Length: 275
Image 1 (cartoon, rainbow, N blue to C red):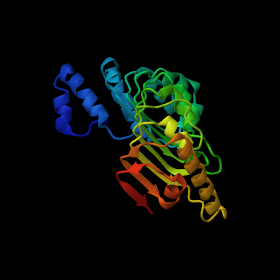
Image 2: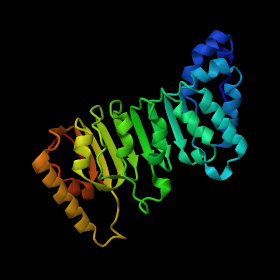
Image 3: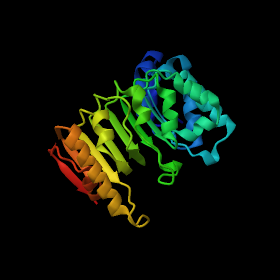
């Protein structure tokens, strides 16, 4: 069953009013949907009293694998996303978008979404959320063949320039500017990162406070690693000398390769070097 604690179930079921008051708290703390039976359980629970349950659903974590998916489960997801219009937090594997175009339509209707995590082909999928006031994004392109296929990470953030506060990228490239300033962003993380240029980061995130970068581990496959890093360092230092850098950063977490390539010339209050 969706709820397993007998005491909690007994209390929640004492009245419809209590049930409604407890729902947002319970749904926010429910475990991720890791298996298809979890999805079925959630769907059945939501449809016990849909007028009450769907508006209370603020967080949905769909941590599902494509291999065991059936059309039935696709229809369940379409129904949930279409009716859960108050979602604030969503984790979604992007393979679902290829299963049914109705999923994309449902995602476009999530106009209250604030925290978004995408895995697979996140930069393509971001266009579906342009109406959402996103404050935090976690984009994981690891499943999509990086570093075999490099994808610029920042341009997809343009529609969210005035709302974003945190950007977390897995398998990204930071060489092309966002295309707009994101003045509220204070934290940027990218690991691993195939390349990073200050000319992309500084204009995109002028008020950055925390920067976490782990350089792509080219060592065993690319004999020109040191040359590539030296070129990045030279370009970054030239940019900083002409256009300036941040005045200071509160926290920088980097590996040695990223630290060297960045060539930071601003004040750093806390520096952590990872292995």
